[in-house]
Image 1: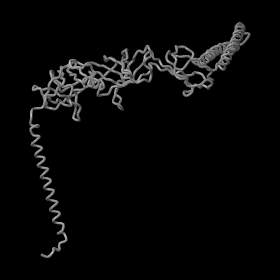
Image 2 (image 1 turned 30 degrees about the vertical axis):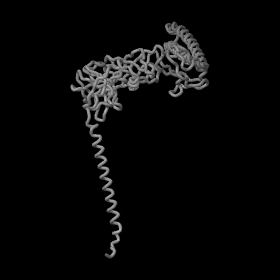
Image 3 (image 1 turned 90 degrees about the horizontal axis):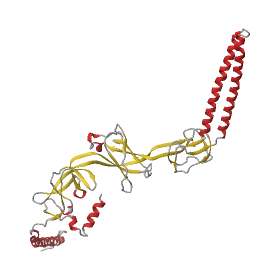
Length: 407
């Protein structure tokens, strides 16, 4: 037979060989998989899985406080600006910045010389006015019998009386000028209007002090024996309170949590509650008052305000470790009548210590799984582990520390 003239013929046989080899490889792989399944089948179809050992907490409805932890900032109950009331050169400073000062203590001195001169001038004017009054009175007394004898005209006597009255008014004006000069001279001695903690001096010695808004501020004084703490509650939190709002007469308990985690030993009093919601932030502005005898609280300091307002009934408490947070919401595992795990969607509230408050989803007497949740699956059999106190093993220590870390 003559040779083929089809150019693709030399490639036909290698292609058939390649396809045959691939088919053979697939058959071998299928046999191996089938053999593996046959071998593993007895192990997969063996006994039921072993129960998971967990700790279980039986829940009962409770009454819990309605509590919020909110960031607040401290300010002095009174923050007074010490300003100059007269102009002049600042000559002396009598206090150290940051010291506690008493009411009336001298803080600064403005050059008093110009005001001493002004006082001397006012006194001289008083002396001049006094002399004029004496002269006017003598003139009036001299003309009085003469006008009765018709030796002088009535007009001359009336002019003398008017001169005497004008001179007496000049004395009153001179006395007022003296009082004003004395006040200005006293203002050169700048004193503390209230007791408290002194602030930074705004001007150096030798500076020209003016009485306008920009040049008159000398320092500030903060009263810290009692401090105020400003904070606010969101509308979502207000909705949880009885009545849905808070005012000065609402019975609340106010505590402060300091930066080191400790609780301030003195409770506060609510002294201001806004009557309208801030439309920009959606919050109600509040202010609390705390006694500060040891000056432990400083203006500008940030603290956590813990406010407790009323109580909520029929609430369940479960450890934080028992609540599983998912994209669809929070859930817990409960033990059903057959001793198996079942999921239960729940509505959580706030934290109280190490526990979640469960507002809905649980019933009285439910048994909630509180640990070992990584091994628990819906429908898995469970067995209750001994109490933690009875199984104080080294392996329990990391769990305890982990719970503390999640606080």
